[in-house]
Length: 234
Ligand SMILES: Nc1ncnc2c1ncn2[C@@H]1O[C@H](COP(=O)(O)OP(=O)(O)OP(=O)(O)O)[C@@H](O)[C@H]1O
Ligand SMILES: [Mg+2]
Image 1 (cartoon, rainbow, N blue to C red):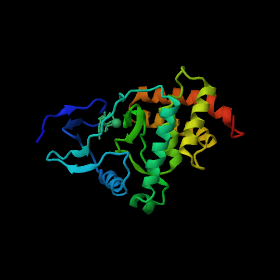
Image 2 (image 1 turned 90 degrees about the horizontal axis):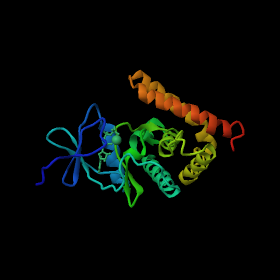
Image 3 (image 1 turned 135 degrees about the vertical axis):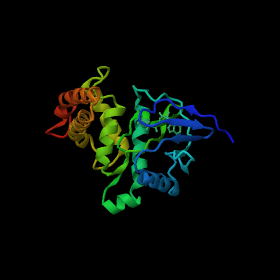
């Protein structure tokens, strides 16, 4: 049996290593709900997430290793990549509507809560799987989608103008294709998500994270929210 451990890049919170065709992730706290989610996704045949194979002798999660051909810090995504990302998020959310914790809580879906490009695996440059479900909780589609719009589009990056980002948000929303997640919904909700992340970062002594979120908030208010509301369209 293969036992060589290779540290995987990008794991900032957990120690993540590869052993053969498996990934081992350290476990802190109670992950029973996240483990049940991965089992649910497997049971209904959702193919965009690793399979949970159990816990090893060190108490680490054992997951199937899924290959990726883009670095975790990739950015500057094309329309085709954004379209594929939004479709993948929609498929993931739809796959969670029957998950027991979602049904029991009356929520819409199981939010991933940190679905950024860094928590994504790519095939031929296209996103095909989500990873890192530690923060998954029952919630709303809009909550999760708005955070992904923010992080997948690099909102506030000066490489993109306001009108260009409005176009890319509309593209993302059209690909997600749900009546509760239109451009107007996302434009109105982005500042809430950004302010929330800034507040969390401040409360957890992450000054750089708070500054980044607040800069994004300023940029978004000026270029996105203000351009869309109160009319709900550009
Ligand atoms: N199932 C998997 N298959 C292939 N690679 C994986 C898998 N799970 C994790 N990885 C790799 O390990 C890296 C870190 O994984 P993960 O995001 O789960 O760790 P983390 O410490 O929780 O992350 P973060 O720093 O975002 O909190 C990923 O960027 C990816 O390269
Ligand atoms: Mg991660």
